[in-house]
Length: 258
Ligand SMILES: Nc1ncnc2c1ncn2[C@@H]1O[C@H](COP(=O)(O)OP(=O)(O)OP(=O)(O)O)[C@@H](O)[C@H]1O
Ligand SMILES: [Mg+2]
Image (cartoon, rainbow, N blue to C red; front, side, top):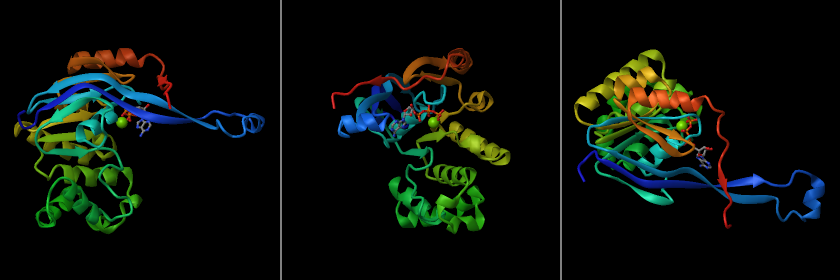
């Protein structure tokens, strides 16, 4: 494989869902509390196939809960697919939602080093990058505050500041542009365009057509965890709008043999 290439082959990601089954105390007593909870399989993604060539920029679109973040996490290696496989080559720098690669109890500063270590950088290498990361984030003294006290915009600033400074071959961004303020969004977009011209592969989740169109010529539409469309962004958006008119899907449960 070439650096920056991603192959998503028949990927299925399955979560165990625990549902409260019993609705009344009487039922609970009758069943002696034995069947209070049941585990079911929920496929957040199924049979997803996407090939991304080095230097390509692709947007992932779809309604809330369609599986976009799950797919990004699978590409980033944070989640393992139950079926199929994700192959990639090169360093992946993920800027995904709160939690992955961050410890809320630690300060912004410590999280920079923690994140760096996860991406394969030594403490010394991260020391060299540290000031640049803080400068990009514009967090100032907040860098020494535990990140559990950050606002979502502050968290996104730190996440993107790290992601943009670790020499990625593949940059993965989940909706950072939605929570950063306008000026920070512009700064992120400019940085992403730099990466694009440097040949970095880019995977981007957004509900904003303008942002997606300015960065990605191609888009994949997810619907109920399935790939509903993959192609030029204008057509993808039409497809997304069309699908969006229906009701938000409930989870499609396949009862597990648990
Ligand atoms: N850890 C988990 N355990 C159980 N279910 C999960 C888990 N993570 C995600 N899901 C479910 O998987 C489905 C896809 O979630 P995902 O976060 O990928 O959606 P999304 O497309 O990113 O949505 P949004 O636009 O709201 O960010 C949802 O139904 C969600 O409830
Ligand atoms: Mg999401």
